[in-house]
Image (cartoon, rainbow, N blue to C red; front, side, top):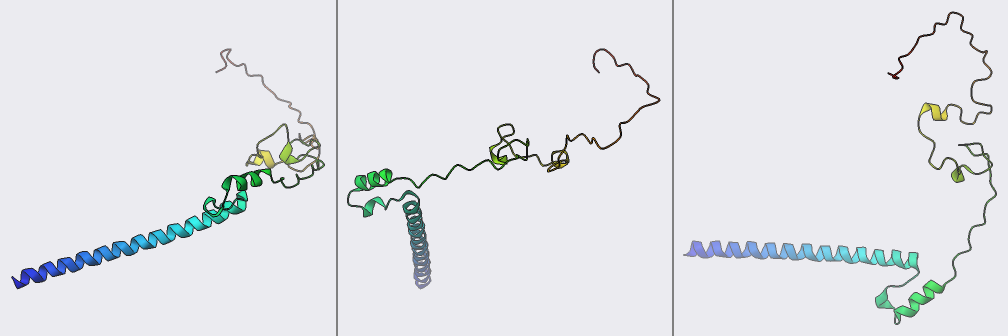
Length: 142
């Protein structure tokens, strides 16, 4: 009987220890969530210009005041710096109307980058074939 009471006491002690541990973990998670919420509120207050709703006496007035606030002055339109790196047009590369995507990342796309000229290697002498042979191709294109 004494052994049984001792075993029950140990089980009760273990259960109490587990309960305390779970309670401590829960409190730690709640503290972490409260800190994350505080950081999110600060971030929102900065980006939207609105304080948290619970801290404002009349939230509708605060919202209207934030929405009615004049925006920051729009950036002055820049003069085109040109020439465009993609098409050599008189505009910035970022605003190219012909090639909207970035330049591709392979050798042919960067081979003549920044070089003047027609791009066909016009400095070289023309190639003249002397012993050429015409090879007929089948009509089906294979």
